[in-house]
Length: 221
Image (cartoon, rainbow, N blue to C red; front, side):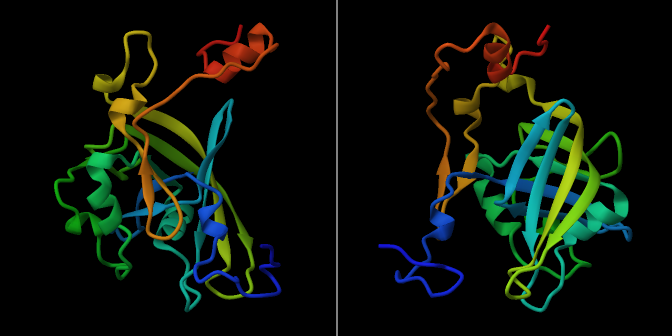
């Protein structure tokens, strides 16, 4: 089977496109408006960009009526947002936070068993129960026009200014205990997955600097 998605509809009853680039890390992003309304929503187009300094990005589709997402507007207007790691234990809260609410209503008020704490650089809410949080300073937005209002996206770039880690999930050798954290990731359709098992592979023939870089050593010197 093959088809041209920009010219013809999917020959399958469900579009395979979103089910191929998987799993996708979830950008569970909290922010605050200039009026003080606290917002949190999950984005499945989220990724780190580089490590020196650490930079990240997320993209947000517009609403069908052309409105831009609150997270994008809040980041642009206040200069900050927070990434909260989405985990299996927090999956219900992550899902509820995806509801489309009016801009003057906070998703936090609807989340079960979720408490707020606040970032150090700006008064942005964070999920206290999330094991890892990034305080992200807004850098820029790149808009890409789609074939429809909903297909148009804002790509937001930011620099990570502070990282919060729950000490309970740090192994004796200094690595994060990812199988215990159990992050969740987005698949296609209504499907998600959870990281409960990991395995190691080292690139053959790579030199010491490359090995340290791939391993994420704190110092490359």
